[in-house]
Picture 1 (cartoon, rainbow, N blue to C red):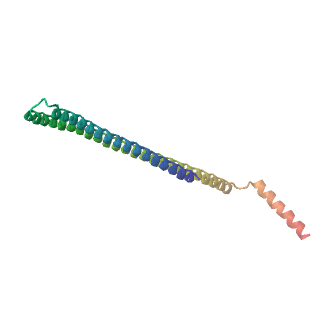
Picture 2 (picture 1 turned 180 degrees about the vertical axis):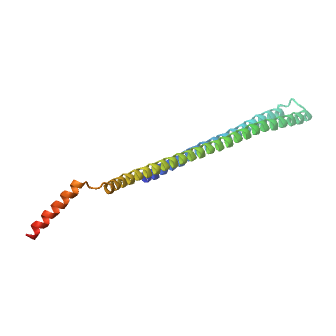
Picture 3 (picture 1 turned 90 degrees about the horizontal axis):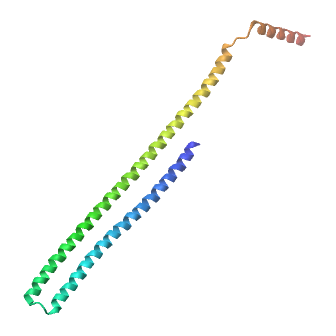
Amino acid sequence: MYDDYDDIDDYLDDLDDDLEDDYMDDDFDFEEETIEDNYQMQVDEIDEYWDRENEYIINSGIYTEEEVQQILEDHNSTREEKKAEAREIYEMEKERLAWDKEEAENERRMRREEREYEREQEREERAYEQRLRIQAEDDASNDYISNQLRRKPSFVRRAFTWAAAYHFLKKLIR
């Protein structure tokens, strides 16, 4: 009887775990997309900014050709430094997310193991209680039987039994 409820509880717990896994995976997927989008947006902003700066330097007519080349080289090195900083932040965020995923998975695994352990303890407790109940019933029936077997009828009871049998036989014969 209890095993049927255990099966239902196990099924519901597994269903909850699956739903939680799906939600958490969706959350992590969304966060991963957000990190990717933020990184790409930062890189695009850096490129747009330095492209505008370079276009201004080239089209301003203020600088000589050599100065323009030097400024463009400086801008490109600064652009690459900014992209490298954005890449470092991106990789740190990805590492943090991977660590969060791993921690969430460990936590889920531990909760599952805890639930399984608790269920096993409950099953063992019920089985032990069932064995005790059966043992108590067996002891009670054995006590009853042994008490019945141990109790010998008294002399008076035996005498009345013989007397009743004698009268019965006497009436049958007549």
